[in-house]
Length: 89
Image (cartoon, rainbow, N blue to C red):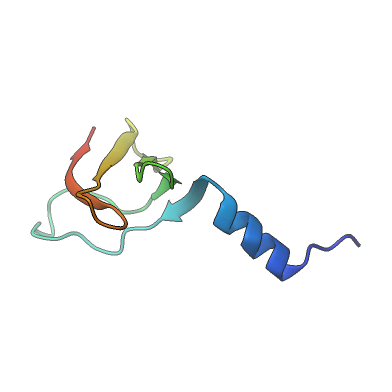
């Protein structure tokens, strides 16, 4: 079969502008057991390494509508990024 060297894959990932991930919640904070919320689904996320923005959608086949997540990074003259605010839609 055709294989790709592990180092080559790592190099391509380091150079990629976008990083795609799947996030899974483990628990809720500050909610009671009868809140009606579910963590059965996943967040499908994209990190833009150029501007630090994180965007994604929550997917649960038994739940509608989809939730959209967007985190906009702040760069306060430091190396790297920080998230000053966030919103769920």
